Length: 570
Image (cartoon, rainbow, N blue to C red):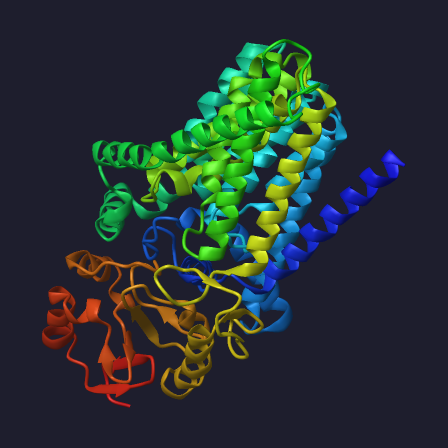
């Protein structure tokens, strides 16, 4: 009977995860998604990396570019390509989660291995399904773990070589992940039987591949041009070049803001657990040693408070990454209980924690995000915490309580998937399923469910482009928080230095056109509404001066959501 009940739970959770995957496939497209897609498309259109592409995340384009190339070759259109990439992303995430389950299941109990794989599938750092740089960082780090742990178990050097390739791909997805190398070297030094040979092999492959990629760009562009392109790219993306001192101050402020939350939850959990012990039977038989019952019940009560807060946060439709507090709670609990681990369990925990923890650190080094929303980038370290939490000398009652808390958390993540949407418009990038939603029926985003305004922008912009934009035009899309899917509406050439969703405009743009004179735009498409430019564009003195004094368009056309500046009259 017990086995049958467990089987039903596994099936129910798997069906729930698949259902969430279907929802993610047709929803949650925001500006960063358009950035990744348009950046990959310009590579397929022939733009050269670093010289003509000044996007800070351009080294992450390879996977989506390959997938988009396949789609375009088969269907000869970009209509529906976003939905296709979404589906591909969910299939890739599901495949990696299944691989994790199979590998972890060789050394861990089935409930723990399954829970770790399920949690990996249910979380995306930005709630996106498609292969964008944040997801790829997580995917490649998970594959790196699979290869590394597979090698440590089997001794097959091919797996170690594959792990080095996975690390190189992770670095391409997020360059600061280079620091993960030092963690892998440390793990090999601790767990490998052939420490020196394995570290040399791993290092040699990483250095060889890195030198090949870096050498290609350096010699194909020339050292001076390459340096100028890097300087220009950094000048146009100041948010990712904030000094480390300023970042550390910001992270300290984040800690001080949230620390009271943990203190309140801890105090609340302590008080509730003592009430249970005082007036009820809770805690009796929960532990095998004196004093354990109080600590275990305190942990369960604190976990329940976090879950209740997470539920209220979902209903409030405010903070998209509120689960980060639960992640930090889990990671801390895992670290507290790590002493119960030994053998294979401890080796898995250490490998996952080092790779995930350094991935989290790499995100903090390069990203402009606050501390806590970055926690999802350390997902491997979070799922590793389930091993010591579920291990050790705990009673059946405590085990059931932990199991119930985990089920509640996963169910809340599924509820969040159903209830919370990431729309194509709006700076907050969050709305509820109760908002006015619509399906995009034209263009690259065909089939995507988003907010009503986002669907209207796609509906009205697509035919405008077909009317005013000609194949082969050099087009520069500008705005405040800008949707760059327009580059895929027509067979055009990207004329701007970057397809970033949060661009900046300065003299660095002129440097781009000095290095790439054939990229000077035929058409500038500016974010607008019924002829009124976006406020951020109106107050940008450099941009307005360039449009009026240098570009001097011969024709200006007001669309519904865009203003079209034509260099030559049509």
